[in-house]
Length: 121
Length: 107
Image 1 (cartoon, rainbow over the protein chains, first blue to last red):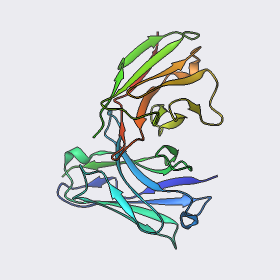
Image 2 (spheres, chains in turn yellow, purple):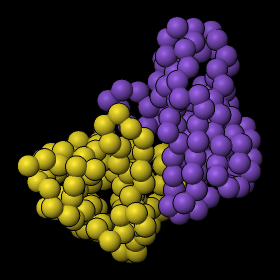
Image 3 (cartoon, chains in turn yellow, cyan):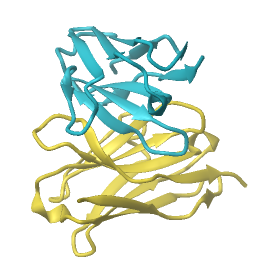
Image 4 (cartoon, helix red, strand yellow):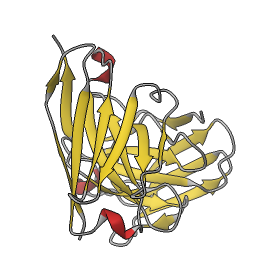
């Protein structure tokens, strides 16, 4: 059974770069069966889809974040990563890495436990 | 972007009650809609996809319906483990968007 685990700094200074990694266990990113995404949730608020990547390296980002976000993959380590630049208070959130359900539609059936990233000086 | 509006934002109910949550999309999304359940400190859990298909292992007291712009999640007989926040999500077009959530609280 596939499990996802986020890792990275819990505190980032304003204007700096937020970097998180998602480690996939119990399955291979390179199998090509799934797409992988990041979703975030500010404390006490709703969910925002950030973007996706496929093992081949193809990506698509939420236009609201597109200028600041990069999602990349390391198939050798079975990981994918999120990079968000020029962060502000508004980027404080729990960040989840997630898997898209098989079958072609964008529903998310496997979630990491989430990691809280606070933007503060 | 497609806006997803849930109502009510919160509902108080008792064990055994029937609870209905509504989700409205700002434009038609056919039946490309999911429902998630989230408990405090936990990630969301996918319950229903395709507006009405239950994910394996989800109790049959959960059901979903609707198409186009109006959708409903129904819990036929609320159980203690169902007290949580529920989110709808449209899967029709990028960027995928979520409703604001409905918190189901104990009455």
